[in-house]
Length: 309
Ligand code: BTN
Image (tube, rainbow, N blue to C red; front, side, top):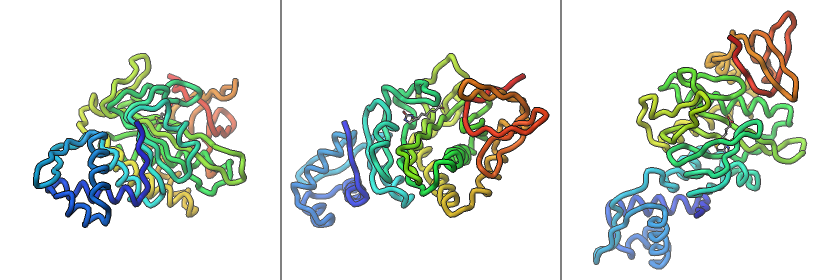
């Protein structure tokens, strides 16, 4: 099941939801929205399809309950950022990143993913209860600057989860108490000078997490937060940090990454393309590379990071 919302359609649904929370006749709702009564009826059907319970009486319609993960509420959060033109929501999909690759200035979200993609070709377990979304962005950056966008997304999530004292493990795992609560997968689409980037974010809210890796969810950590509350916090921080990035204020983001880092100061081993580098992680440079010191200074842009005891 799939729902595609433009800004305009999202506004119409949100207005209808406001009206029906109080209760309204089909006629008055139609007049308020500037659409026909049949359109109102069709929109009510859509609300029901997506988990709203709508009571119907001689007086009209009234919403009696709404789903925890309402795609309409999610769309409000998306469009408030002013970064996107489209929002696509799935009950279930293989991977939101796969769908977002085909779109522009769009956010794709799913209640559940069947083949969630992790970094380095891994599988990302995505049962209901988690936050899974992908943003299709055209930041106007050359491909060499994409690592900065990836780090920016990490900073935004860690800031959004500051209530849990979240930290960043290079390149952009978000950890709480040393365990992973969020993974970010950035994929470059196309080969243009200025590329499109899909940034996929998976946050463990109350979904089951794999037990063979050090991962946890916010519920297990004692935070009873809703998926959309987390989404709202992340999108607020992301739109702010993204604007900084594209207006040339990367240095501020870099400083924040350093402040929130769990990695700097540790002995690390970075595996990338069959090679590995070992040393002390000492910084993030102006290009977004991790700096490793082992007698000489090395720069790494991507790879897997292990902490060495
Ligand atoms: C990682 O391996 O740490 C990255 C995980 C990224 C998972 C998210 S969930 C939403 C988006 N869609 C995907 O298929 N993957 C990303």
